Length: 350
Image (cartoon, one colour):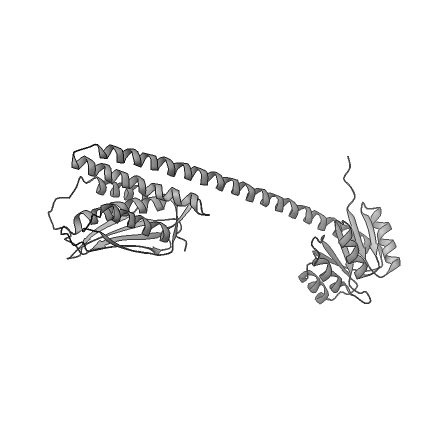
């Protein structure tokens, strides 16, 4: 089955030229309709479907540029080829700036008709490519929306499952009498909560692959401090987080390291009942890294002192640093301790 002829509207006040264009381009595979003025042409385009419109520049009453402006204001305007008898570049530039896809200089010989047919064919081909591209982009956007919905559902299910695991761990801790085992399970529960918070934010916000750290990290360290606080013995944590956005993997890494460091500070920095301040900061240090610092004004670590606790947290931090190419530095501040964790990232967007 052959392709239908492209339907073209040729707008020109010259009746003889209109008939010549319609007859000649009809033999070249175009179905040509004509209009004798700008307003008539605009009305026809408004009411009828055309694949292409050609507009002459010099027309009495309403010239081609005014006609072009009205055509482009229509809800659905086909591609426009501008036709002018003037070889002045200003006219062509004005037409192209106003939305014409191409232009040709009018003459009375056969070359003009051949050029007109060639230009129409090229513009129609460009329009077909544009529509194909727009359709492909629309399909890609639809696929991305479906993928985001799927990721949101996956993150929702993961967060629910992690919450269930946390409940099981809490139940197990509740039946144990050994305080060391209770504390180990408590830390395990908080580590799971650190990851669960990430997934909860991924399905409850519009972003399903990246995490806004200024929203996530302060809430996380507040939960950690609350978990280690008791009546009359509260942990005071202050978070200063730059408005950076990290991918999920890097956000989890920062969250896990912050969990270990803040938990250790809550437990060991201030042995007296009156807890001091624990400061948490996160900021980009250059285009390819972020810096997490957890600092306190407590007892610090004296040279030669044995490590407190099981050492699992420290081993976890060092393992995360090694697997992500990060660096970690412990600095005794006299008083207090500051731990600096620098994580390379592909992009820390603000």
